Length: 159
Image (cartoon, rainbow, N blue to C red; front, top):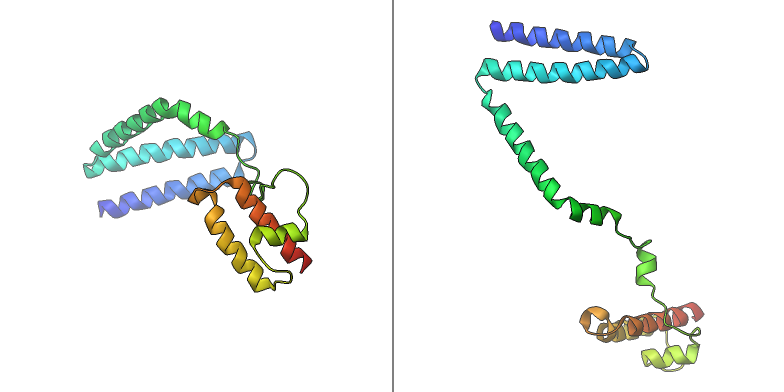
């Protein structure tokens, strides 16, 4: 019976607070929000004390303290990570163009090792073979991979 009474009191307090909060405006709303948070904390402490679980508060406070201590220690690294210069987007990172002029069709054919009139599938297969050998992740250079990608783009565009 006491539990039911406590639940009814808590629900009544919540509904009263919601009514006060909704009818308030501007600065009053902020004050009621703060009062609601304080009331929630007091109610939580009261509930934990009634159920014999007040030690949970000590555990939560010590956990928060340890977390804040770790964050304080890691703050220089976190600050560096937040302020680092990020790439503009995927297109800017993946589209490294080789230095110099645009590539001609004949030059693109020789880069991919193709004959005079390849079809779309031959271009894609030749590109795949060439990029597997020249990709930076496999020991190649970014410039060579960019040159192969440019050759593919030139041939697919002119097709």
